[in-house]
Amino acid sequence: MRTVIVSGKRSAFGKFGGSLKELSTVELSGKVMKAAADELPLPAEAVQEVNWGVCTQAESKEVVAPIIARQSLLKAGFSPQTISATIDQACCSGMAAIKQSYYSIERGEVDVSLAGGAEVMSRTPIVVPSLRWGNKMGDVTLNDPVYGLRYHDFNLVSVDASEVAMDYGVDRKQQDEFALDSQQKWKKAQEAGQFEEQIHPITISSKRGEQVFRVDESPRDTTLEKLSNLPTVFNAPTITAGNAPGLSDGAAALTLMSESAAANHGIKPQAKIITVASVADDPRNIATVPGQAILKALKQANLTVDDLDLIEINEAFAAVPLVSSLVLTDGDRARAAELHKRLNVNGGAIALGHPVGASGARIVLSLIHALKQRGGGYGAASICGGLAQGEAIIVHVEA
Image (spheres, rainbow, N blue to C red):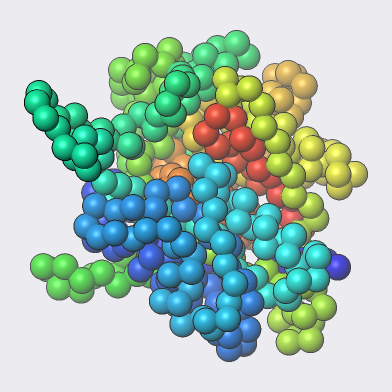
């Protein structure tokens, strides 16, 4: 069995409190799921399975509750017989969803599976732990789950990524330079219209009437001087608001099919999946796991780093792709610098945002389109998730 990706769409990504804040995760997910499926000459009921990454399953304006994949696929008009799974693997969730769809097709369980993820971080609720059972006396504490993206009894991921970057000799200046490059690459790609094919416009109703949201909202004009003057955050030695992505809202979806089913329906694949790989490590090593995951995938596919025409590594912080580049090149700084020419060629999460449930699917979609724009070839996408989980996927796009 061989699995192919036959369609994909994402929303433009909104900044925290921005244009998408009034859409529930279910509503946004349903719109993007439908947009990906509508690219195909197939009825909606042809989608047999949906795997969907979401990290926060409660919202501030209504109770969205679990099974967001199920709620969303029904909103998208898919068949009630469509099976589904909602996946929380932190920032890896969207790519883990693709992995599960890949496994389902490779096992012969389904022929058509939709995968991706969404996050509307603007709607993350404030938690009042004492409210349910009452607060007899004293102050009431409000907890904000998105502040610092903390894990109970563990270091902040920003601290771990920053300290490991320093262990690898990746200093603040290198991280700021990488962040600036991400912003500039996004701007160049946006001006060249390279995102138009992958973005599904979202119509939003507001007090000002209906507006169509189609351009990523987080990118900003900056300079190395401005970035270097920003203070570090959360006691991380090198990480700032400028060399890390902002909190974001967005969704991304891809449709996977067996190669034989696509051929039977006359559907031309956008990409062929070569392999997928998962890793995990000590939580402190979060910045290394994308590199580790790609190396594992390359070994499975009998390929090398030099066989890869393009690479996407999610910019959870600038430290992550910089450290993982050194992992991929066995610490060879000259080779890592050469690899950067093939890395995140249209910018990454530092520029366009990081809605955590969606990013794993977004970088796969970005990789496929970038390969198409450059004449095809092999590409690897990888992402780290909280407490040092990692996912990777290798694809091939025909010239």
